[in-house]
Amino acid sequence: MFKLVEQAQGVKKLKAMDLTKSMKEMFGDEVDKKLCKLAIKQLVDSGKCVYTYFGGSYIELPHREAAAND
Image (cartoon, rainbow, N blue to C red; front, top):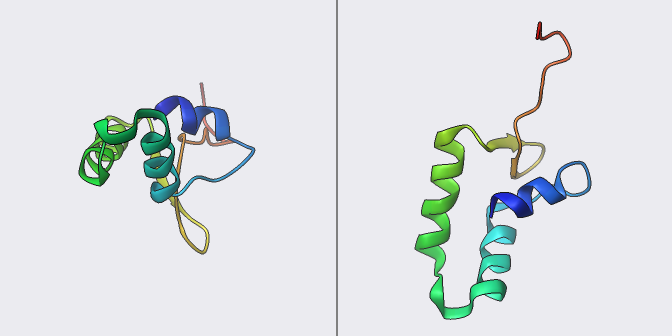
């Protein structure tokens, strides 16, 4: 699931349902909506992905702030 978000970064914004549908296509009956929801929650809680909102909720990689002092 993380790879899908990573590949879509900068190209397309993915919604949670987009990820769920992709997982069902890839793994068939092995996954269901609850499992996908749990996986998304783990990605967000771990900081690997964030929810963004631009007229709808999307799941993306965290953005690096331009003013960040690295």
